[in-house]
Image (tube, rainbow, N blue to C red; front, side, top):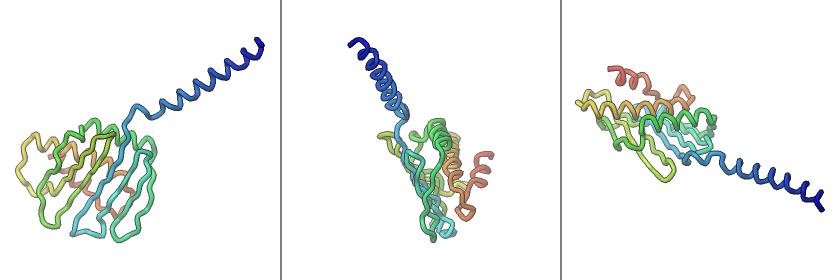
Length: 170
C-alpha cells in the first residue's frame, strides 16, 4: 500500500504543475482585435484594409484584388501591443486632420479586452492650424499607424509613412 501512494503522489504533482502553467499563458494581456484601412479615392486601386485577431491571424484586402490571409509573428504582435500602450491609443480623439472630398483616410479600429476605440486620420498635409497638444496626439496616432502599416507587405498598397515622417519632423 505504501509503495502505491509514493507512485501516485508524484504523478498528481506533475499533473497539477502542468495544468497551472498552461492556464497562465497569455492571461496577463487582454485580447486584441484590429481593423485598419487606408483609403484614398484618388488612388482607389491602392487602398487597402487589414484585419487582425489576437492570434496574429487576419486578412489583407487591396481593393480590386481578392483578400488574402496573413499571419504575423508573436514578436510583431507584441511590438504592436507595446506601441498601442506607449502611445495611449485608447485615449486619442476620434479623428484628426482635414476631411477633403475624396481625400485620404487612415482608419484604425481596435478592441483591447472590453475597451474599443476608432481613430481616423484624415489629410494632415493641408496646413490646417493645429494646437501643439493636438499635433502631439496626431503623432501618437501616426506611430501606431506606422507599426500597423509595416504589417502590410505589398508594394501596391498605399503608404503614407514618408508623408507622415515629414509631419512628425516639422
